[in-house]
Each structure stands twice: as structure tokens, then as C-alpha cells.
Length: 239
Image 1 (spheres, helix red, strand yellow):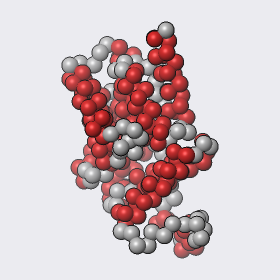
Image 2 (tube, rainbow, N blue to C red):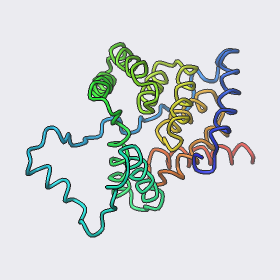
Image 3 (tube, rainbow, N blue to C red):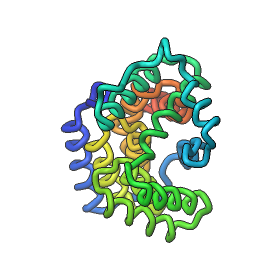
Image 4 (tube, one colour):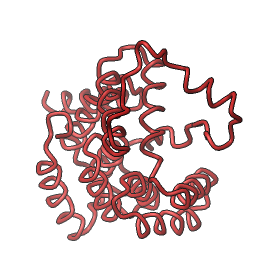
């Protein structure tokens, strides 16, 4: 489930929109809505390998032993999922934007770790290149990530966002959908998908998609702004 939306529902929406894309992007998509601001792509996440022993201990003591959950009996995969479940519960309930952003950073720290140092390095090279506007290099890096780790959701999410920036909406939609199959809570992929719907002039679908992302991360300003604008537009259309 993605909030109240099933992966099946996402795929049905994707197939319908993909069919429209195959028939040709409507003229209205050439101008589209105001340019979207990208969600925070570069989040500074401490690299534990770069910390000395004392600093590592300081980081690990950030949560008191009395309150920290005990994950010792879990496999690494189960521990990761347990941490994500806990973080998403906190994120959906948090009403302070700054605190919510910190929780989102913790989620992204887990998302950005593929389990392979090589893949992680390639992904971050792609992210840095995308930020610098070097789209060709970023594309090369993200393509390598998805080939090397096809079950790594973040690789598809970043590739999807780049495809959106390249105006390759078919690819962006396919890869956003692939991200959500692997990680149904990926609010970044939902954001990209909502942007695509807006570019295609499909405001109702965009609004629904943003609402699903908002259930996961209600204090994300970019989402709140787009939700307000779309709700206002659709209300005006009805009137």
C-alpha cells in the first residue's frame, strides 16, 4: 500500500497514462504548469567510514540505550525494514517541518544504501553530476546503477527524476512506477509521478498522487504548495 493507494492502483494509472504518451504528448504539456522545484536531492548524510572511533561512538549514542529499539535479533534486511516502519510512523505523525525533515533524512540514509559500496559510489556520482547540470554523465551513472542493482529502488527513483528533467516522460513514468513496486512508500517517486501528470495536463491524477505522497510526508512544503495550487485550480474549474 502507498498510503491508501495500492500498487495495483498505481499500475493502472501508469498504464493509462503510458498509453496516452505512446499516442503523443498533448500540446498542453509543452508549456505545462509552473516549473517544479526538485525535492532535496543532496542531503548531507554522515559517512560512517570517514569517522574515527570516538566519533562513531558519539553517533551511536545519539539515541539513549533506554529508548532505542532492540534490533539485535533481526537480520540486516529485517532491521532495515523495522527502522523504516518506525521512521515512517514518526514522519506521518510529525507536525513540525524541521523535525519532519530530520526524519526524512534518516529515511533517505537507508534508501541511499544499496548494500554495495560500488553501487553507492556510482549513485552519488550521478546525483552530483545531476546537481551540476551534467545530465549525460548523470544518465550514464544511473543506468549503471539500475543494471548492477535492479532491485535498488533509489536507483530507479533518481533515474526517473532525471528522465523527467530530460522531458522523457514515458521513461520517467515507467521508472517511477518501478520505484514504487520496490518501495511503495517512496514519496520522491510519487512526487515525480505527480509532476508528470501535471505536465500532461492531468490535474486530477496529479492531485491524487500528491495526496498519497502527503500521507507519507505531510510536512513537505513542496507537496503542500502543489496541493494547494491544484485544489484551487480544480475548484475554480468546477465553479
